[in-house]
Length: 511
Image (cartoon, rainbow, N blue to C red; front, side, top):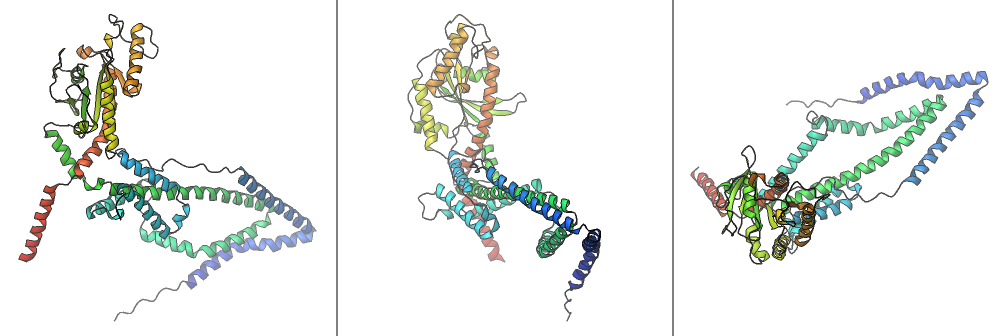
């Protein structure tokens, strides 16, 4: 039977270390009695004691005065409303509302939770319950509304996020072992008493030089005040980070975003390329009343004449065209719709908006009958307001036929709309302002164009710039829309899982 090795005794080692430290400090310690003896022999000991007492008292008085000044100048901290980390770019209004509740919990969280694992877990439970209740307000016990695969995927994401944070913000984290950290932690706890004793001895020794002692004491007090305030700030930020990260994970869990993995998203995006009608990388809906230039807009963007254009309404049904960049990479799929000729309800618009990421609304500058445009846009806004799980896509207003504004015969572009110097420029500016009011759109979201001149049309460069910006905003909404589609129950996947379970059972029975 092998004898267990006896634990090494650390007593002799500590004794040797203490003896070495004593020998190193012995010359400094001897200076106190020897220096006092020399001062007594010279008759200066009384003067030295009085001078030391005056400097020490003055130093402590100065520290006390500075601490009172700092306390008196401290303003009440203003409420920190900015999140420590921003929300996700593709969150829907429903998820943004849940994030607002998490932010309120983060602001109300006390920094004291960082000192207790129990308090951290209790606060995390409060955050999770609040988010679960946001998504399932009528459920008796909303906290359990998730599936096992979602929990596993959430653990994977949180672990990956923590690993990235450590790699980016903790120097040497990839080279420090957990065992080393634990040994340093235990060594620090065991050496606290030795540190306090050595610090007291050092403060006694430095009294040999009263001026240096007073200055060192003042510096130490001021640094302690600054360190305490910095520590409070960092602790409060740390508590907010804890609440926000727990809230972010809870939003991902209860919103259903984890029901769709990357593979499902990729398959769904690939299917959209071949579906008929194909929504493309970003689906853009081109809409407006009859004969306002929708097909001309499509042709101008495609730099082609694929869409029929005539004085009569030609587009009898929705037609789709791929929009590519200079290198031929697909940017979006343009859906040229028939002109709006009657009022449609929000539900009727919803059938078209399910697969829309961006809207180009075309309106004629010289026509005053915009009530139908406003009713349509309001119905679209109402549909997204009633479906908070979807983000409203960006709406870009394209103002066509600006050449027909009064005076109709004048056309000598370019026109400076910021400082109009002609009647035509003034008419264009006033028309944009009126259209913005009629359609409840910002003036900055309106682009005045002339589309009947092909590639030489007026303001096409500005139109392309606005479309690019609109498509960039639409990509976030597209990712969120695909996620919602992927979360729908896939009964084919259920059948595949059932077949897989059956194969496992057969294999077990055949063994």
